[in-house]
Image (cartoon, rainbow, N blue to C red; front, side):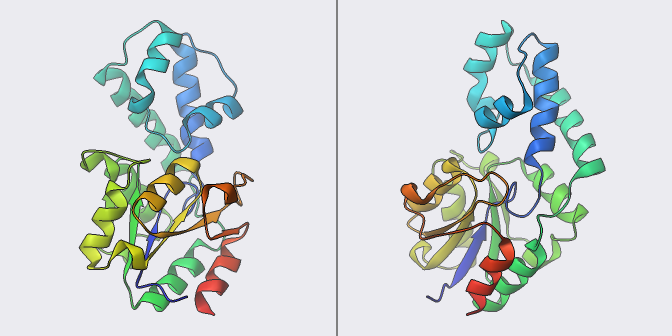
Length: 216
């Protein structure tokens, strides 16, 4: 199948960042009175924004989720990411294959805040291929699992969402891509999570295999 555009999630697809971000979140929540393992934190928060879970956080910490707390979290998260974040194996090859497949019509459509997305992509030398086509759910009325960020990316590229391929790694993101009307491929290499029952067309444990499939 030929796609007219490829829309990428960022965290867990292009960059191996989720364990770093959740490590910072776990430590800050523990300091606020909510202790949990990194595994439990990832299970609860991967694919979601922290603010979307504010009621749960406030219930478990007994404290309001303030702008100051969020600012401190973002600062600690970004410090750790700058030190440790790496590209997912074969991410560069996949981006190159997607650009070749679509004549350059590729975009990043993430639920993360845009400064974080730009910082991470630049850090792992993946920002340039996307140019100005980097979109954040934070800048739209609704973030994932709603389709807004994928619809925005498709519209900016001038492509019908039904002619787009979305690459995702979480149930929240898969739901957003499907709601946009796109074909969704799942990357399962980091989470080992079976997303096939959600309606993804194909699943891949290695981005190199996904790149090869786009090049067929």
